Image 1 (cartoon, rainbow, N blue to C red):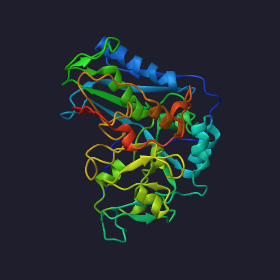
Image 2 (image 1 turned 90 degrees about the vertical axis):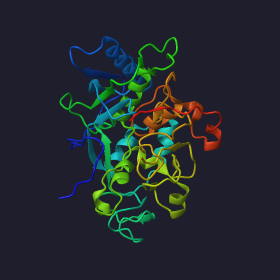
Image 3 (image 1 turned 90 degrees about the horizontal axis):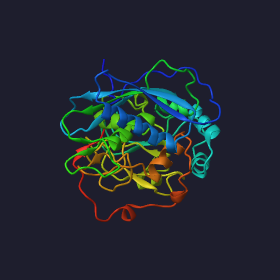
Amino acid sequence: MKTLKNLLKIVPLLAMAYAGSAQALTINYNYAADMDARALAGFQEAGRRWAAVLRDDVTLSFNIGFTQLNPGVLGSTGSTQGTVSYNAFRSALKADAITAADRAAVAKLPSGPCLSVYMNGTGVNPNGVGSATPFVDNDCDANNSTIRLTLANARALGLYAQAGGLADGSISFSTAFAWDFDPTDGITAGAFDFIGVATHEIGHALGFISGVDTMDLNRNGAFQDFQFTFISPADVFRCSPESRAAGTDIDWTADNRAKYFSLDNCNTSLSIFSNGRTHGDGQQASHWKDNMHIGILDPTAARGELLAISDLDVMLFDVIGWNAVPEPASIALFALGAAGLAGARRRKQAKQS
């Protein structure tokens, strides 16, 4: 029997229960006894960076280490994931809405039990089996009514109350690169920012993922639309001019058209997403657009580049269910087009996953 090629580990979420007030994010690590002390300290500092901007009262655990990764890949994250209904997800977001961005995003969420989706591929595409041409999927079956999220994101939303047990993810760093473990004096030429890349990888486990990466690997028509139950929280805010014109809630296509981050039912673009390694721009859809220096979740990093969490990073985590403190007010709900982000850009040299 064929199975969808999913990029990350999947486990079902358990009982749903809303958590109490948000106070502090705690991240614990599981690691081998002989792990480089500098690397361990780097992971701990990366966790503190997220705890400084996300104040949810949850405790997370990650398995960490060094290993041989694919050529050109700095780090890789496998996050524990599960599914909830779109109704449960929307209800949790409403209960969690604190900031202006939260409230604006929740106000524009579709009120019914399903999302209408602009997608392509699949065995039911009216343009032909596996066709690259997008179509409107609004039949309210499993893929329209299901949200797949990381366990950490579910904890932040109060959708997973069980303490301990499952690790929230596993993060591996490549042994093939020179790393700079101390960013306080800049990043050494020829080396990569270890704490910055660790911050990036933790960000994926916190919830910056996209099911478009699964569609990107399985667009050929071997699967029906209802089998693609991979719409992520970030995908709920993924749009394109074409999806807006088609009247759908989100753009979930695997192709190289521009896809943007929007909180107002696709009317305003706040930033630009990557759109897929196979059929898109060459980068996983679970990232910002490359070479635009949007934030810590950019898909690549350069030697000597100092990496940092941006206001746009914080805003995305804010609207998918984390509590951002302080609120990223400096970019609250203004349009940010590609032209505004462009300019002199340095070509990045290695992938973050």
